[in-house]
Length: 94
Ligand SMILES: [Zn+2]
Image (cartoon, rainbow, N blue to C red; front, side, top):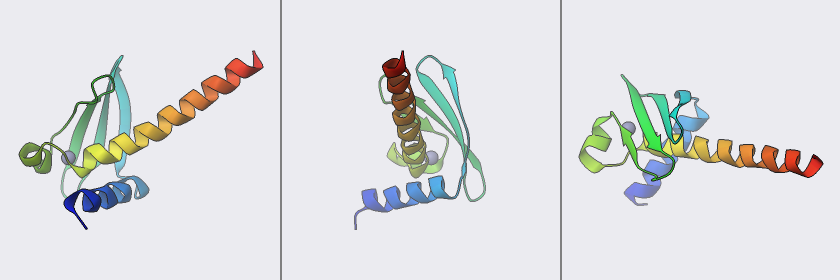
């Protein structure tokens, strides 16, 4: 199993254990989220348009990606899928 798949499993665990504490839009295309780590809370920023993301953890600092970003992306994907479903349903009824 590669590093990437391990990180995907860890990211899924972060989501399942509800370690993403909050998720807020800080402007039109940027989401900020707080993720509980083992000893710290990390802040993730994701630009929805460019897909660029940052995290305050050491893993991101050294590798440029981390499980916190993947976890927040997974949650966002669910939200966006849900939001567009609601939008489509309301459009269908109007
Ligand atoms: Zn991180």
